[in-house]
Amino acid sequence: MAEFLKIAQLEQEGVQQLKSLETTFGVHLMAYEAGLSIAELSKDQMEAIKTLEEKLGVVILAFDN
Image (cartoon, rainbow, N blue to C red; front, top):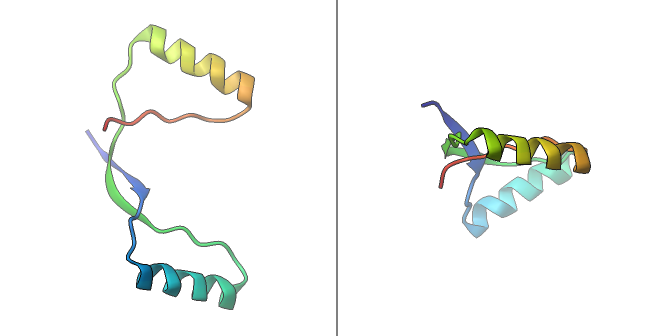
């Protein structure tokens, strides 16, 4: 199964460096790292997610722990 990205856990120094670039560039930055796999869900689980997506107007991704 392919690996997907998750939000990176940065040390305080890394967070400050990221915030500094955000200020300099005038944009929002997010740091990611490898580490998630797509969960294998049952048909019923997929339908429940699809229903919630439609209700909330979002896209939901399910990953294994």
